[in-house]
Image (tube, rainbow, N blue to C red; front, side, top):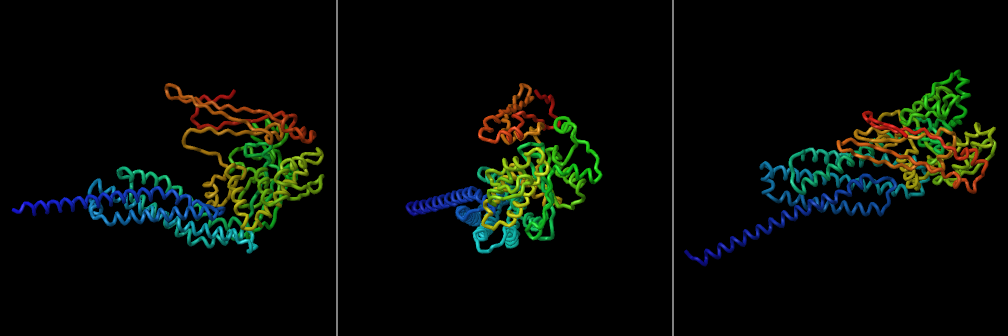
Length: 529
């Protein structure tokens, strides 16, 4: 035997094995690195799909770059996965096979989600181009409809990609995974439901928004104006109500009436006194009958919206509306900042110029004084609301940013509440939580609701602060303690204001509140002090 030759062959074999080990190590390290990077970059997909009509070009550039990075890593990881015959053969093995199938499923889901993000970027750029095209002269409602129409095919493709990603996740199943794959599944489970929900909302919006704006025939809505300077359980005292009719994205008619006109109209229609909820009668109405102005004693908007509609129709007949919308003074103030000042006729005062800065106090002035005219001058609120609605519906597309920001904020903070009688449209309202409904969480909760019962506008001046403490006993029982603190700052607020108006509105700072705390039905030992 030639020893040197044998040693040379063995050295070559070692070198070859070493090279294979290095190559395999590079391959698996690269696969791990690319898959991990793809997992991290997928965070951008949810941001992209959720981007709205108020997106900016620079935001899209950043998201586009992140999606491109995700695509690069996904392609690299898929290539490495396909290249390795051992991994492909490992599919038949009990434990290794689960890891390979999961890796393929994760990358397949990621691939589809990035494709959905790419489509969303294209839609967002179209929205920006439409918004910035100031030469069209079309109203916002018309351009929004055109944009939704153009977006239809892309939304269908995005929905297809999201559905494919969901299917890939189902293929992964609940099999036992190790390390990064388990982390990737957790991340996917966090993101995918939110992305799917956003897409569902977008598809529903495409289908129902044109109808809501009257592009599929006239739509009628009962609009309720709430004065949240005097809190009611449903948001604020109802000061005006009227039916808004829209067609082809434009307001074609409105019939706003002062809430104080309801009792005479109801009596003229042959109505008799209605039984008010006992606490409302006892603490606020006393000898006065229940009426439209305080129809929102129930804090649940779907409930009290129907109550208000029923009362409205008792006085003024069937209205055949498609929904009920409630807005308070915050909404009017924010919309004035978008449309600019409005001049309205206030009976007993003549023309009044209202801006976002003075609207709240001016409306209080012309609807409360002089004492002999306050009932009939409540219609100034409805007149302002009518003018604002017309101007908002006619806004150019260039004002998308401002309007979307305001409406989102007002809906999220419950200054805007919506009930639609089309089930699919209402499902969309429910998903974005603009329905004003009482929450019904599965676990523990505490919800506080307050009503002003001294007929003042002190809620304009101050609000309570709350502290909430939970003490868990040695046996696991939990004691919850809510403390509300009211600091009456009416004296400081009154400085520099008309003393007669302050006295008329604030009753020298004498505040009365009816406070309710909603707790789970099985809560025990609930007390107040």
